[in-house]
Amino acid sequence: MDRNYGDLRALIGFLGCLQSIESLKLTFINIYTSSVSKSTKPIKFSRLTSLELSIQGCTEEKFLKGVLDAMDMTTLSDLKISMCPIDVIEDNNFQEKVGGWLSSIFNLSGGKGERRTFPNVEAFSLDLVEATQNLPYKDMFFALPRVRDLKLQLPRCSGPTFPPRSLTTLRA
Image (cartoon, rainbow, N blue to C red):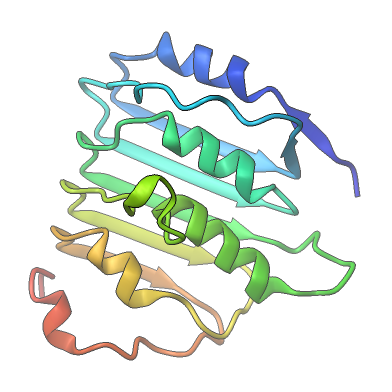
């Protein structure tokens, strides 16, 4: 498996030049970082309404978290996440890899004292290409308080175990 070291500072600098884009798709395949960017004020995207993240292979959680920490997500209305840890051959620990990625996206570890929220996301899609057993459903949906359209493609995953009233904003 090839390790690709991403320049987190350069990527954040590039994203800073795109403040007026409306839609963004980021694909990370086996990306690692040799350094973590110092915390700065998140980039404000005044028109960004759609973000699609494709995370694959052994992409490092620290890199993914660094990218998302640098972005202000308040204008998003559509969030799509696909995950494919198939290249994780050493120990086949898909559960750990997917859990780490979700923790990085939603800041479930509570770094900086708060979890990441997507306050205006109404359409959310999560697609796992490889099976995993348990997902932090409750934490994910608390981070998405306005979700109305939901698409989950979760092969062989256990179902949500939180009260259905937690999803009262979903459309029928």
